Length: 109
Image 1: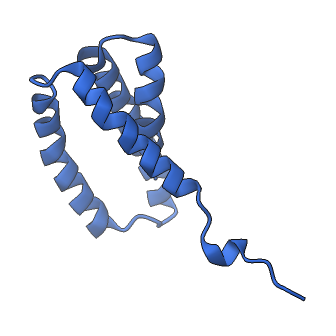
Image 2: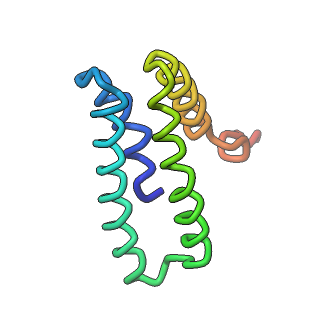
């Protein structure tokens, strides 16, 4: 997941203590995300666990879409941004916590 955990955890957590989502919370969480992703990529690359083709595609897509999102959030009310972020995080996190049915099945005797 690299730095994805920072995106899911840092934005809502920092939002509890910092009131300015656009100019303080978002840049700080992006910085934390970039630092953790870079450090973890170095560790995984040393182990030979990085698929460079997929990593390059991911870097290209996020490099184009992140500035677009940063520009759009300047023109949207902060309340509407939270209404988009929080349900999205909730849905994704609860989906990650569910176990597949094959793990939960109990063998009958």
